[in-house]
Image (cartoon, rainbow, N blue to C red; front, top):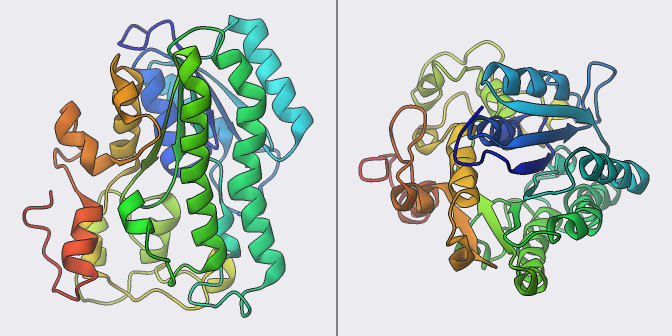
Length: 328
């Protein structure tokens, strides 16, 4: 498949679902050869216990006309990650784009809890899933990535640098620490890659309509706006806390969900960065899908350009009624 990324090789670590899956598909659609990895497989689920599998991601890459390899890899396992990078090296002798999207730690969160109230085992597991995985993957992948000038590392995160400057008390100590660490890892890698012509950028989606989020509200990508209006709770909505890591059920509807975005939106942001010869202007920074959309000219799947983080600050956090006018 030809495209702006033809000839490039990408590794999307954490591509079983959500943003990672969409990024793998869109990179392949743009012509890159994509290695997509995750723990959840038809051979067995990860601790997240979701039905999506890494094999399905591979099938979506093929359906999009792309070239990709879907592999079951635990990015906490040093040997598995080392073997993965060796395989990419043997297959292609290069790596042009590394996307660190591994997390899944939110299932261990006690949202709204203080540090001393939070389950310590869950909090420490969150740090392992959100920090150690990225470190292990970059440690092994960067020597291959710097073999050619122009390599790109994308660290997926949650929240802009400006928004995360204040302590995110609703998400709590461990979640806040993971996202602060990802921002710092981005800065560190940007400095260390610069002499090799490389770039590191952190990218955040807005309110992502991931498979889990859609399930929580009992909607699909086709009828997601039903979650923004009052009415009977859709069957399957307000997911059980023991399944999703929350200490309470979500409301049956959420008007501010109007600013949500599909995983494809942030995936298009990553593709735009990967294809930009001047992407070093973003190196070391945190950028959002809504920030990049008007600059690079892409839209969400419905043709809109949601700017979630501006909406959150100017509308949602100020307690104003939901109104996405001017934010899409």
